[in-house]
Structure formats: C-alpha cells, structure tokens
Length: 304
Ligand code: COA
Ligand code: ZN
Image (cartoon, rainbow, N blue to C red; front, side):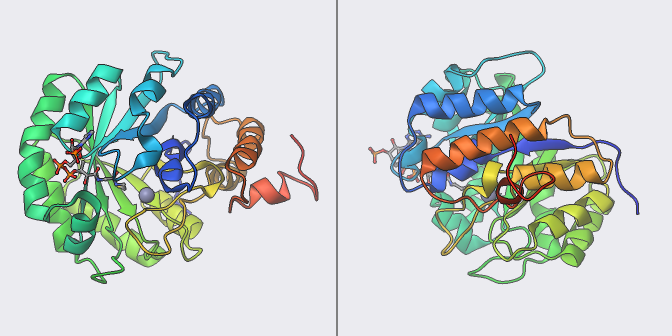
C-alpha cells in the first residue's frame, strides 16, 4: 500500500463543528477548546468564521475567539470568510490564513453564500488580492466537490474549472470538501488524480463529512492518492447548516487512531485529544459520533 510517513491533520471542529450546534458555546470555552487542541500537537486549525452573524450565529464571537488563542510561531490560525468584510475582520483579529469557499454546485452555493458561482468568482477577484496584500495566506475550499444533494454528481471538469480560477488568483492551497458525505473511495481517487494531472503545483487538502459512514474509507483513499493534509473535527462534531440532515466531519481522534496504527505520524497526542473530546461532549450536552471516544484506545473502557 502506498502511504505517506507523516500527515498533517487540520482541525476544523471549532468552525465546522460548532457552527451546527443548537446552543451557542461560550467564547471562553471555544478558546479553551482551541488552546487545548493546539497543545495536543495540531499545527493548523480552522478556528472560526467571519461571516454574517445572522447566517451563522454560533460564531458571532469570531474576533474574541481569535484574539484569545495562545499563539506560537508554529501554528496557523485560519478562519473562513465569505466576503471582503470577513477578510478585514479576520485581519484585524490576527488570523494567519483565510479560507474562502465556493461550491461546485450552483444550488448549494446559493444556499451557502447567497450568490451564484459566477458572482462568487467575481467577488473572489476582490477578496483574494485584498487578503494577499495583507499577508494573509489564502486557502480555497470547494464545497460539494464529491456530490451535491440538490444537483447530484459533480463533473471533474467543474472542479478543474474552479481550481483554474483559484490558480489565476495566486491561490496555492485548495481543499476538496465532501460537504454532504456523498463521495466514495473510488470517486475520491479519480478526482484527486484528475486534479493532480491538471494542477500538479496545487497543494490539496481533503475534508470529508461522515454522513454515510464512508469518511475514513475516503480519507484512506486520499492518503493512498498522495494527499497529506486531511481535515477532521473533534468528536465528529458538526455539519453544514445549509444541507438537510447534514452530519459532522470524520472524527479527529478516529483519524489519528487509524493512521497512527498504520505507522503514519500525525504529531498529535491521542490521549490528550480524547480527554478534550470527552470534555467537549459534556459541554455540548449530547453524544458525539466519534467511535474511539466511545471505545477507548485499547480496551473495553475509556482511559484518559
Ligand atoms: N461580517 C459581519 N456581518 C456581515 C458580513 C461579515 N463578513 N457580511 C455580511 N454581513 C451582514 C451585513 O452587514 C448585513 O447586515 P444587516 O442585515 O444588519 O444589514 C447582512 O449581513 C447582509 O449583508 P449582505 O451584504 O447582503 O451579505 P449576505 O447576507 O449575502 O452575506 C455571506 C454573504 C457570504 C457573508 C453570507 O451569505 C454568509 O455569512 N454565509 C454563511 C457562509 C458560511 O459560513 N457557511 C458555512 C459552511 S461553508
Ligand atoms: Zn464541512
């Protein structure tokens, strides 16, 4: 099996996870969550989003959250932005990176950011240079890249077209997101191969929701195809608010468990993140879908 020796896990729970929670999480708890995760070894994290607080009320405290993070030179604090105002807010708060998002599906893009894909692309021509001039790293995510609940299959051509637009704007890092959990390992392999052939210089990351239980299988397919940045959410928390019956990302601790057993290094302390995941589960007040959280690392009972 062709596998990397080491991967980076980009934690997205504080953004993708918390945005879908029914209750607002107190700012100090969000900051504690992020700081604990960085202490456990993460280098990259999507900490929040600077979007319309009416669309995503759970993350209306984005400024305070970013300002509360214990910073070190090795960590990258990223935030999702939806427009130029988001970029300005992220910059003022001290984010290192902004993530712009565009959907491969017209209907999902409209529901998510209230624009057509064309309008989103026009807006990126303003948003991306503004962020780059301010020395923010810009990452672009393609939502519904592996299928859309409203529009079905997404042709590879569409994904390549969007990446072409990103490349022209000077974006080097692209995340392919399975927002609705419709991908399968073969599709993941094919799409990555297609992107690699067309745009070998783009650094890919993968973002899988575990809606139909294929998240880890898809992650493994991604690793075998040579992608070494995977996104995950602690406990499997989350889901897109603009997709009916959406569920969370692959659980970070399940991903760490899987790859470390296979001899792939993550730099993440599994015991520490399990402790944080259990704390998070208590905090949100409902069961989280992560499996290792329930079963423990090695035995019949949870050990922390
Ligand atoms: N920060 C704070 N407020 C913002 C904002 C931002 N980045 N962008 C827009 N707003 C506010 C405006 O001030 C305005 O407020 P008002 O209703 O009090 O007048 C309102 O939002 C509408 O502004 P408008 O310019 O019409 O933007 P919009 O509503 O079309 O917003 C997005 C565009 C992308 C910011 C919005 O659709 C959004 O936040 N979507 C959520 C994206 C998201 O996080 N999805 C999650 C999964 S990827
Ligand atoms: Zn997501």
